[in-house]
Image (cartoon, rainbow, N blue to C red; front, side):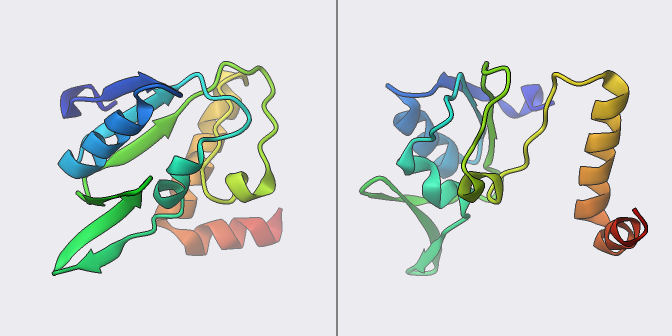
Amino acid sequence: MEKNNNLVVCKSGGGMVRHLENAVRVGLPLLIESLGEELDPVLEPVLTNTMVVKGGETMMKIGEKMIPYDERFKLYMTTKLPNPHYMPDICIKVTLINFGITSRGLEEQLLADVVKQERPDLSAKRGNTA
């Protein structure tokens, strides 16, 4: 999906922070692979979309550095854990997609996410009738 947008792929740990800083600065999509059940605290401002306007420029604090934020930046994260249990404070900040389900179930899950994003009124209506 992000192949044509120069997707940056890295593993959790080591050089992840450097890749994150560069992706945020340049506006590239970033895929962080092999996450565990606990996320690196450096991801917190990205997950909460915490930005500061400084001198007319939108900035994001990553670690101890203030990084210029490019709106084209996107973050994707994957785990190899078969049944991860993330803390509620993580779950409310991300969209979890379980690819271990049937293709029909995945299609319904993705469709529900798109409807929720694009037409919250229909999503709410569906939630009231379900």
